[in-house]
Image 1: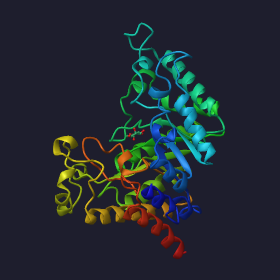
Image 2: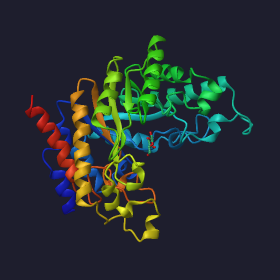
Image 3: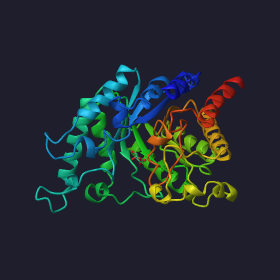
Image 4: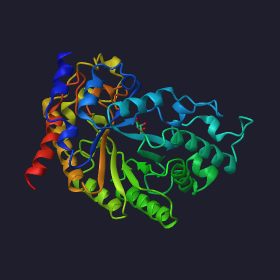
Length: 371
Ligand code: GLA
């Protein structure tokens, strides 16, 4: 418990340091929502003022079976209660996505053939009406459509696109607006820092705006690497959407520290060499104990520097940026621990703040000091 206490007692907290700029959110898992995670929950309550659900509001978990009885609201209800009882701004993630959506959604009632356009639109409408409607006035931000673009900026050839056609995106926003007219509706995607994909998103938003579709914000997932995106790319990306009159949220922030995932973008080869054990191999095969392996100090410093420069870009655009959400509480919670250990967040596996935590706090202090 001493470790937990130390992390909670850290002053100033993230939400305090950024209170004049934007909300600081975190994605929570089921153990945290039900307050079973005694290491994570005190950190969540003390450091953050917004929550996103890692999984419980995705179509698969909340609506696993067809029909009005096919919903499983328990964990999502608890998520909303947990956030409200801690006075946090809540995010709904996500309504329409190509992934984590059950097969039945795309199949006709015979269970074999592909569903037709009108039926799929009806299912989408029912789902959005039911889920958004249930939490109307309580969940403020909704990721209405997630990841509709391919890397070249064209529309991803998802089943939503193939069955309904291009207007599935506009319809999803209209249905969400109908279900909660006061909710802030976001389009959410990754790698929008890359110009081709960003241009595709800008064109998509312009098209939706020209049609009068209620889209209010863009979510930049920002699953970053040690060498990507640069602060300038991040800044240009935020600017591109702010110029369209949209608010911007950083929705899934983490920085992957595994050498293998840097995709040779890093010019610093020695950095990769320092962390050999991060290669993609099953951790068990390497005899790695995911709970105790530490990130080398030199890489800790690189990570801290990366967080500082990204927060510099967010602060620069604080008029457009409403919320910055980390995708997980501690390194041990991160989705990036897939067969390898990873160290992408501000708190280590013991719930201790890392040098990156200090760097994020310092970025706010320096920014305000320079004003
Ligand atoms: C995407 C989704 C998130 C999550 C991550 C990986 O970014 O938007 O909900 O699934 O992938 O965890």
